[in-house]
Length: 390
Ligand SMILES: [Zn+2]
Image (tube, rainbow, N blue to C red):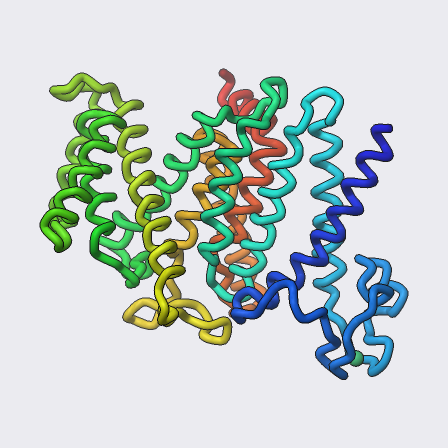
């Protein structure tokens, strides 16, 4: 029974991988992911089911079109095999006999993350239509997790999403004050802006998570009432934020008596929550807009800042991080982020040495780091504590 189930889930995974290839190619081009049926780019022949058997068709045809002999990229069977492997491992790690339906939201979430990482790799864009629903799957799906599965509860998933988004949005804001490379130029102001994020971050550092949420809400409400963005100077807010952080690090309790951990958690949760609320607001606003908002196309290449340098970490990464935070919880996400930075640095150095020049965005590293943290996080933390001799 168990082996048959794992094999079945792996086969379904290879089919989802085949679908992922279509999504990754068509979504950034604004094409339908269901119609028309796939065609050979060489001769235009509509592919028949026999051409579309995951992995096997590619192997049988030795990577060429049956009619015209055009090469078919090795990436297609690799993605199909990767999805099959991921699905099989998940079915094995979360056996349906012991943890029930736990595996279902995980399969959906991992599929969406895989597609997002590939699209980001190809086009430097992370579609909101993929990352924002993935956050919802992570949080809502947590209701289906079995307590014995060792996964976040719905509350932990929601906090994990906010904390993860908060870490990235604060790196983005603080980094943007110093480094142009981190500045995402696309800022939207009313009624949801990054001002709510900044205000929530500061209030959280002073009084914890409820202060953060109240302050962010107040900024949005005041902006809505005033019918214009209520703005506070960002450098001053973050100067105060840093001061409050140093005070908390020094072990002095602030006037409102929150300790360092709650100050940090409050700041991250507040900043992340308002970054995500804003993201959802603007996503819906764009969907409702009759004129499609001009967005960079697949051919445009890496988004650049005003000095022509690629943006190292954009706002898409904030939403992607939130989906990963919902899957891993706050602590697991931090381990994943650390791994992503290390892997990104290693790949970057290797690329320099080998003379490669293609800029790889951060999103794929974030997904790979998080999946490694998910699989090996406990072992890694244990190894590190051993190293410290704790
Ligand atoms: Zn062909």
